[in-house]
Amino acid sequence: MPTLIEQLLAPYRQLNLSAFDNMKLLKGLLAEQQQPCQCFELQRQYEQQSRGYYCIEWQQTWIDCGWSNDYSASFSTMDAPSELQVSQAKEVEVPLLTLQQLSFMCMQYSHFDHC
Image (cartoon, rainbow, N blue to C red; front, side):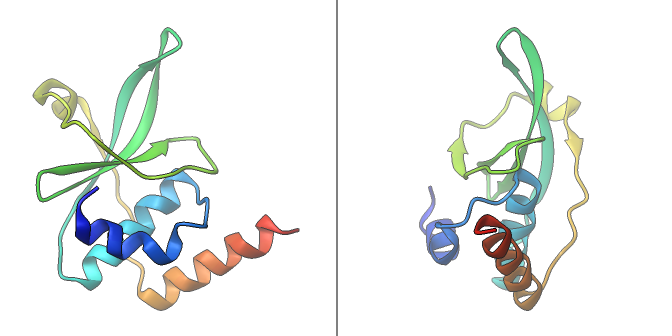
């Protein structure tokens, strides 16, 4: 994982957010650093069927945020998808949250994680 991404995500490593919330978190943290990114839903073969997964492209680095329906996902770097995959990808509109909003989102997860 790129150093900047590692540094940005370090305080949040103990959380297991949903794949969509992973995208919100990373997009918000990158925006705070004036680092634009794009969010996508791509398709991958899994157990003989096609499944969607969320990913972020930042400075030609691709970060897998988890399966689209995953409520407890983790980040990982991934190989760049093929041009065909990108052309068939769905660009996902992810709300841009402030650091305060991201903190509230993470607090909610921490609270419900322990209920």
